Image (cartoon, rainbow, N blue to C red; front, side, top):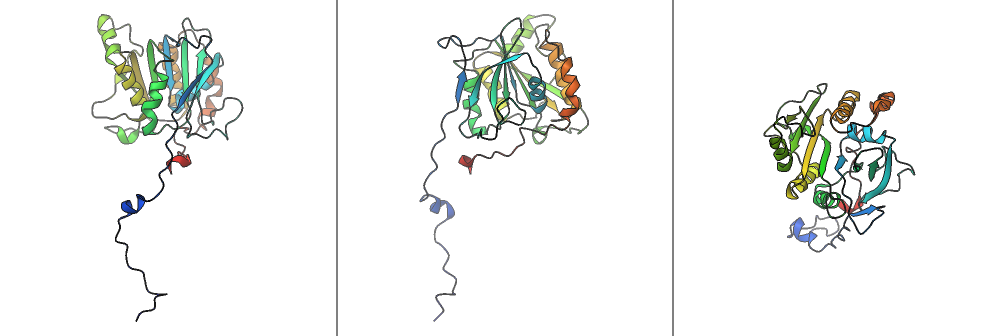
Length: 271
């Protein structure tokens, strides 16, 4: 007779997924919410342009624009805010909404400085482009994901592409000179390449609501050169009345600005 204390126990007749059925399920996540300091809470905001900054270069540029006013924020319950500073910082995990001062029409900027999981992208897109914020036009700024790009991307070569909704392209066809394009002269995103995540959800939201939307993606994801390119693109095509020259004084700082979007998703709710 074998020693029952040292003998290996028999293998379980249950699969791991069967054993998981007996475990207590995690509580459902609370829905994201939008907090706005709207002077007329019963009426939605109607910006002529809504800019949503997702890429590190675009976040850097809008962080250094001083003529803006904080008017709200997007709250994700799974994102901890305990390590955030009191004042706005590029290292914070936040999603603040600003109104640009001095613009001819209302222009809003959403700085998404936190990782948004794929499961939450549609819910976030519905909040940013929904009942409380109804924009006439939307510009989304993101970076190219190397693994989703069909072709080779050299680390020292600057690339920028765009995708547009049907409403934006229809506006172009109505103008014989193509003068209504928000981003003139940019190549379209190559066929066969893929975009996903929050940027894709936002562009799809614009398409569903027949809003003139443009998604601009840049490569590389970091560096002084790509920050200068994004800044020039905004100055030339989008923010005509804004002086962005002061941002150049702190361009060296951008070389030390690591990717906010690459920080690991550290919420305990997803582990």
